[in-house]
Image (cartoon, rainbow, N blue to C red; front, side, top):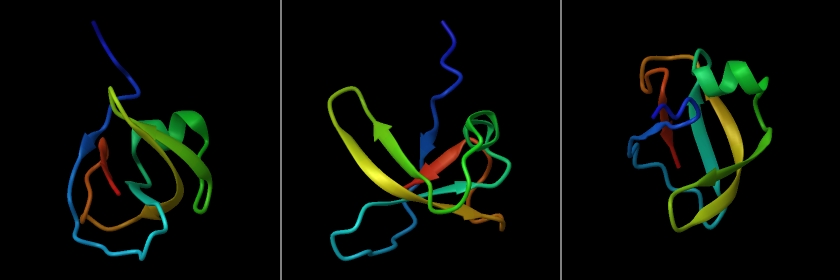
Length: 70
């Protein structure tokens, strides 16, 4: 079974003081297929939890396409 919207979590160590922020590479398949841009509000889910977060788009190699950080 394929899950095209699944991303790999990568811890970056960014502290945001109770604000939920999501970081994805600009070439991430989810960003491009959904048309996400910087500061979009997105829902990030696991099997048991979810958060609503502001999206920040990364253009450097700190994240690879297919990875997400919160």
